[in-house]
Length: 323
Picture 1: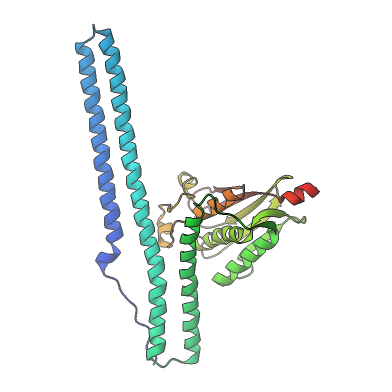
Picture 2: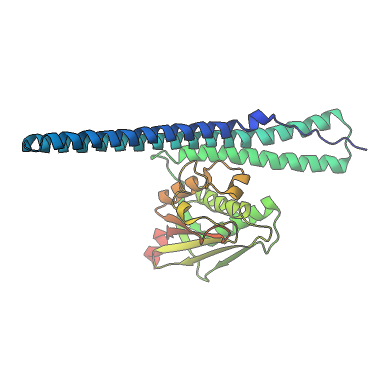
């Protein structure tokens, strides 16, 4: 009977460090909110009392109102700033925890299987299975590193693109086949449709491929057991082409639709938290689309109702000139 690879168990305290850190941040936010509210109430009380004692002095009354308005504005702005900073720090902590997990898990897995192959006799069939698992973990590790590097490069305003005319339908087919192979999906899991006319856009092939593979990766990760993803491309008008990527997955609440494209942001959904990620995918997608002069939006009827991502890109300039 073959020995199975040892499964590592992490201590309870280590696993709960991020939770404890987030709880401390929230307590700090509550303290600052209470402090701000108390200061506002105190200021109002002092100002009202001062006004009542000086009703006959109009000049002082006007001056007091102005000072009161300045103090209140400063207190409100200070409280808002503190709360935003605390939330930003929470997002940074969540990002670091997620990246640490995404880097550590595949490395530990690869090391485990390599040690097993080195120290024990393994049948050829099992050996090939170990190789496939290690390759999959290597791809996961590489994808995490590429996302972090891509997020850094998208913030550079002078980052030049390798511009060329791209057949959008062919690029989408390549992205669909790449995701099908990566997740070993059936042909019916992802459907693709296009208009008969050839549609070309001007842009960087690698970066646009990153956009579509990221969106398809998300559609796969957040779909249910019966996966049904559709990709469609068509001309919106003479200058704009539109791409729709729709899934029947867990959906997005209306309050989160505009926030999901922020850097490090992950929707606070129980099912979402079960799926690991860095919170950079949609931020990278939006940054690349903006560089190409387009825009992206998301639609969803809520939790469990699936989601649709709509990308608008300008058509190729050379194509428009020919038309």
